[in-house]
Length: 411
Image 1 (tube, rainbow, N blue to C red):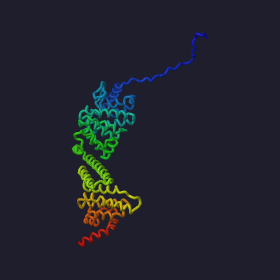
Image 2: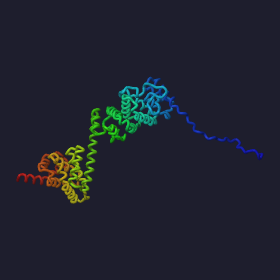
Image 3: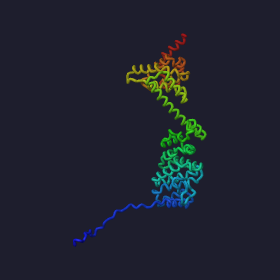
Image 4: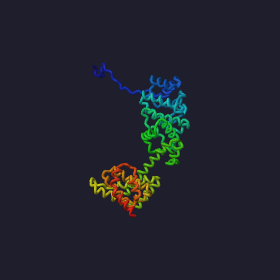
């Protein structure tokens, strides 16, 4: 070999690195192909589904485009609902009648598509999110169609569609302020409850992380408990109104218990505690019987129990009753409320083993502190209706009742 010749690798092929060559995106052609399937089958969704199943269209790449065709009849321009260039069909969800029986076939059709191509659920989420965030671009009748579709989608348990996809996009301030969201969600509730119970709806709202924030669907000028009740009562959704009122009531009870517990544990001034209760009762419009139940629970929950030492527990409970008797007395304003308090004491003594033998002593203490009247105690003894432990408690209270009756005879 000459010194000037360069060495070579004889018989060896030098491999060049392959580059990933991506096929150009062509959503227009995909959309036109899907539209043609609709047109070829005259909108018969059963036949459309079969044709789509047998097609070799690239759904993994153009899933969003597919659902644009399903909802709007063709492609839409980015960021709008305006039709884009290309073919369109008249069998879309937006074009059908605003009736359940007209929209249900589209839900069933989508369900079939998702069973064969479950990955498309993400594309359905994307398109629904865009549509719901653009409610102001629809006519009222079109928004109603979307509400009916959404209700039916959840009623039919459309494969994997998460409730957050529907509810969270609705909380755009501009949509809420215009009342569009409230109108949509009202139509949604009404149509969903045709096939489902209120419990089903509440469960759906919980999964959508919106159950505690239903007022967020209301414009700020109507965002109140009264506004909620008025609106949904007019819409014929009285069970939802009753559920919301019950929920508000439970929240206010919890807040009242929390505030009272703090004051009682800290042994706040009696007049201050009484004023707190009065204000809470006024704000929450709590019934008197419910108030006395809460007061007893809070007072007894604050007792510092002493393990298995029965005598110390008895002393602690009776001391607590004596300390807060004035608070109970302030709200025991009738014989019925006094009787409710005895029933409350009865139930707690029945359910709590360490208080079982304390029933007569607690009743005697409440009598001594002028919380319970003689007539109320005698009524409970003779005609009480709560059977829980009654036989035992009546026997235990008998000596005190005999004493009351003897004192009454002497007078």
